[in-house]
Image 1 (spheres, rainbow, N blue to C red):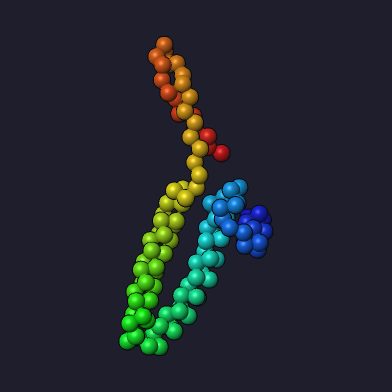
Image 2 (image 1 turned 45 degrees about the vertical axis):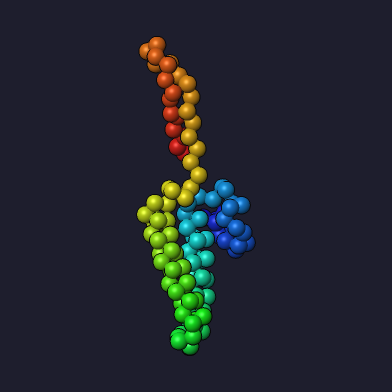
Length: 109
């Protein structure tokens, strides 16, 4: 993916790169997740230094919730990547055997 490598090196937001394919999107998201995991591990280490502090306990709970959300998101990306891509559907009025119908036109590339 030459365009993907260029875009990843630029670190542009995914939303501005509508021409990327799903593979490139996954590469960018994997890189972001790895960076977030390192930051999360550092944050957890700071919180675990004083686990009986009430604010630390609240932050640990938030971190656990974030981790669960990220795992669900990763599973969704892995098992249903098509759900994260834009899909264009075209419906046109048509006549089949004298009967008016709405036809779906598949725009597969």
